[in-house]
Image (cartoon, rainbow, N blue to C red):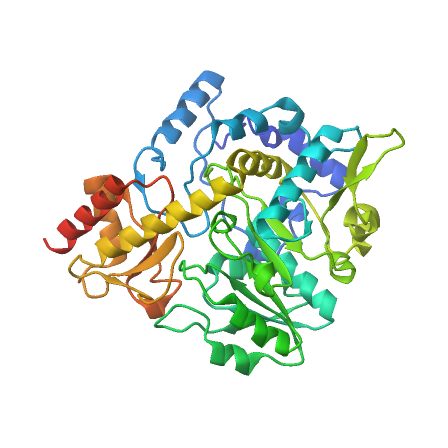
Length: 464
């Protein structure tokens, strides 16, 4: 006899609730309710769920047991990066973003929330100083979304359909850009040079044309390589297109801001600015540009400004050109803007305020020194080669294991099991031309002893 499973922590599993929902929608059954979803997108069987735990205490124990099986980067030595990084988070960041007036404020309306508006305005102002640009949006969902929206902005601004994208961009970011912008943009890939890991300028030159709205490139790129932005900007501008640059904000204490060498739109992720790695969370995207009215009007997200009030000496903080947005125009807005990441914008503002300009310089210099030391030491390990050896790198670089006789998967498994080390991202599937290669990341949290431990572990594994 089949007994209906009722999960007290999943309200819709209660038969009476299911029946009420079906009655409200006019569907005779769950199958009828989902009939519009193509069969290829549906699981053709019931979910393999365990028996329900009817006691909250037993459920809590069960979940805690599952969580205890996880090993996070705070417990072991980690060299993972690739878009989410283990940086030091000042205690002040957690203290401020945990305050109830920030933590629980979703969008700021319909109630007055001037403190939150000012906090976001301060964040945008400090980001503008870091980027050396006048206009910065409130955070988008993440850096991938910021990149996708930046490309859509460029297409609207130029009334052109094609966007060139460097092949050395994070594959997940490229996928998101393609998914989000495919209805209005034709994305075309620009190759990277195998020896340097940088953009193949000949391929870029060949693909630029009158239908190209923009060229999107990350500097530093996914491999950590630092391209010559000014040279790319000249090629793009000569073709009448816009240069859109994705940038790691933690690099801007030591690298030239993209706007200074010709980028029309700059974007990125603020996760390195005071956010913990959090199982896929803790991200927020930024978009920035010069104060060019025609370009500013293409922003879909909120822009905060400051203005004097009717009370002498007092100021207010609020929306600029609100009519651009879907909040005002709904489906007629530039793009539909959903949940933002305002809390992380406030967090990044706290981080930037606590670091100050000199702190950002020291952060970048410290990372450059660690990368230089790691590259020097790892180059001496037999069976290991530095990919893109002649290119300057920030935070990340690629290690080539092709001559070692081991796969990256084997190396990473051994590092975890024998040394409690998380090795680099395996690139063999997403960049097959690199063969058995891995992306290693180094931040200010890695001391010399940490790097030496990695070198020793790899030397032992590759010479055993």
